[in-house]
Image 1 (cartoon, helix red, strand yellow):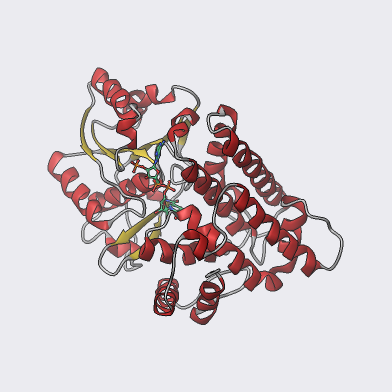
Image 2: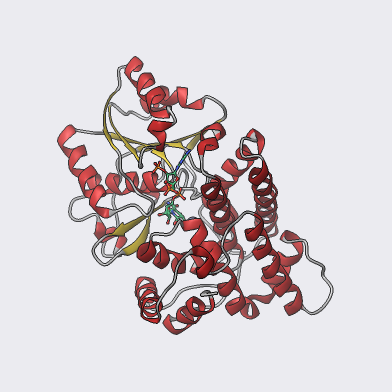
Length: 393
Ligand code: NZQ
Ligand code: ZN
C-alpha cells in the first residue's frame, strides 16, 4: 500500500427534513450574506427553494440568488456569479441542486477568493489559494461534489470541459435528504448511479498500492449501488434505496475508496468529459457509453484487478482463464447498464460522431492530460482515439 492523505472536512447532515437546518448550518460556518446558486429551476418547481428561503428569512440571513447552472456548467455564468458576489459583499455560497450547481458554486468561490481569471485554475496555469466557504443542499446523488475537492466547468469558447481539484473547494456542510431526489427523472437517477459506481471503479482499476480494507469498501459500495439502482428502476420513491444511493455517492468520491492506492485511473472520466464538452450529454450516461470500450482496451494490462472485479463485484463464475473471467465481468457490468436503461455505446447515447469529431476529442483529451493519463494502462492520444472508435456501436 502507499501512504495517503485523507481529508473530508464536510459536515454531513443526512435524513428527512434536514433542509430545515440550513440557517443554523450557515450561521455555524460564519455565513452572513449568501449567494444561493442553483440550476435550471427544478428546485423552484419542487418547492424546495421556497422552504429554504423561508428558513433563511426567519433567521434573518441575507441572500442574493443566481440560477441557471446548466448540466456541464458554463464558465460564463461563473464570471457572472463572481461579479455578483463582489458587488453584493457575499461571504458564503449555498449551492442547491446537483453536481452542476455545486461545481459552478465552487468555481465562483475560487473566483472571488483569488484575483485574476478563474479559468486559469481549470487550465492548469495556477493553483487557488482559497475559496469562499460554501454549503450544499443536494438534490441529485451522482457526482459526490457535495464532499469532493473537484469542480468541473465548461468553457463555451472551444467547448473545453476541465476539472479543477483543491481542498479549498470542499464544502463546509452538505445537507442530504434522500426525499429531495424523488422528483428526479428516472434517466437522471440511473446516470447518477452510474457516476457513483464509476468514481469508485476509477480508483479500483489501478496498478498499485491496493489495500484489502479499501477494496472491501469499494466492492461493498459497488454491489450496494447496483442492488439499489435496480430497485429504483421499479420503485423510484423507495426511501431506503434513495438513501443508500445518496450516501454511496458521497463515499464514492470523498477519497475513502482510494486510500492506499496510486490515485486511480480516471481515463473513462477524461474521455467522457470530452463528450460532455462537445455534445452536452449527461455525465453518467456518457460514462456508461464509453466504459466497456475502455475496459476491453486496457483489461489485459490490469488483469488481476479486472478478475477480482468480475468475481467479487459482478458475481460471475471463477471458472476458466483470468482473461475469460475478466471479460465476463465487463459484459456483466454492461448488462447492468442495460437493466437501468443506460447506454453502452455512443449510438445508444444518441451521439453520431464524425471521424473528425472523434479525432478532435482524442486530441483535446490528450492535451488536457499533458500527453497521457491512466493507471490500469497509460493511454496516449492514439489509444484514446481507438477507444472512441470502439465505442461507436
Ligand atoms: O438544473 P435543474 O433544473 O436543477 O435540473 C437538473 C438537471 O437538468 C436535474 N435535477 C437535479 N436535481 C433534481 C433534478 N430534477 C428533478 N428533481 C431533482 N431533485 O438533473 C439534471 C442534471 O443535473 P446536474 O447537476 O447537471 O447533474 P449531476 O449531479 O450529474 O452533475 C453533472 C456535472 O458534474 C460533473 C459532471 O462532469 C457534470 O458537469 N462532475 C463533477 C464532479 C465533482 N465535482 O466532483 C465529479 C464527476 O465525475 C463529474 O465530472
Ligand atoms: Zn463522475
